Length: 386
Ligand code: COS
Image 1 (cartoon, rainbow, N blue to C red):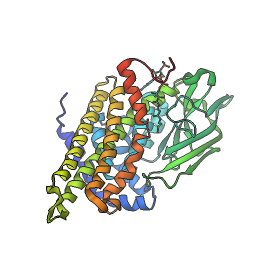
Image 2: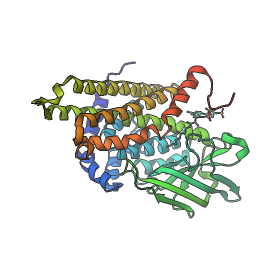
Image 3: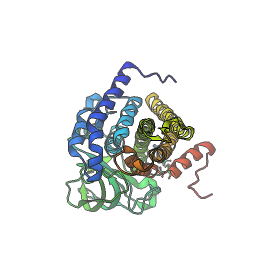
Image 4: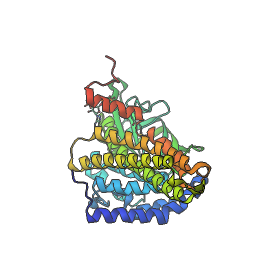
């Protein structure tokens, strides 16, 4: 593995860094305070090409490889996880699924609009009673003469109130378990599709999150992504991309914690000298730095594997597990370095701490990642009774 970035990758990373500092960082605190989903900023992110980063140019995307996509996501994640979530959902969960499973007609119809940000997309897998056990969908799809009718509910759906298209996972035949699942491309203007904003979240307050009810939502026969029975694989393959994106965003949080803490520790004086000169403070900075570098290496390895086309589900789970837990640790430690100043939102570490907490929960909890890794090690699926 050669991790030397080429000139183009360095330029793309530098551009993403400057864009983040100039456009995202300055709005992050106010958007967080106001729980504002900043549509104008999403438009600027789309103009940068980040919403279709990994989509080939022929469908309107930027045509980046995964490693380079990870560099962009890291930079945006350093600025604001709410905006990073927009990229992760749109690019990894929605575009990647359409790219992998869509017919040519579906790709032509959806991808250009998603890449330009004209349309946002959301990923409707989680339900009020279905989280880790993703195969156990309560949402039902019933075949009719004219197509399908969907009934059910989805929960914690990022971009759900603003999306124009929703990937909705539904069970067509409960007796088939995961082999009865199907994924539908649902137009959110369709009667019966009703999103409700979820407020008062601990973090990601500037991210749009919805509870969605689906009451007799009619979808056309050609609105299915893949075939009946492919739904679970559509979801899992999308999560292979989504987890990578979350992990890359968490490397950004780690990096942001290191930079903010080093700056603060060199400025802040106690006992007549900068706190950066104390060994215990340097110890905290060193711990953060080691975790940041280790997380980045794991993300780059997963990205490199994706780019070679090799299987990478386990390595993606390793990167997601490590990077998200490292980011939780770094955010907590960064507040320790900042002392009381880190307890208010004058410094980004307060927001990092709240925003990062969800990353060990969504797109598969840390426990689910451990089960995936444990299964790869032992060959035993711990979720199946022996
Ligand atoms: N890509 C494509 N297909 C995959 C896949 C992947 N990464 N992982 C599994 N599959 C396929 C398998 O090959 C299998 O196919 P067959 O039916 O042809 O044999 C099928 O999917 C079922 O796989 P498996 O037996 O591994 O399913 P499990 O029920 O054991 O999966 C886990 C368990 C934990 C892996 C899964 O339920 C999971 O990831 N849960 C967490 C869900 C999640 O992240 N929720 C958050 C929602 S997004 S915010």
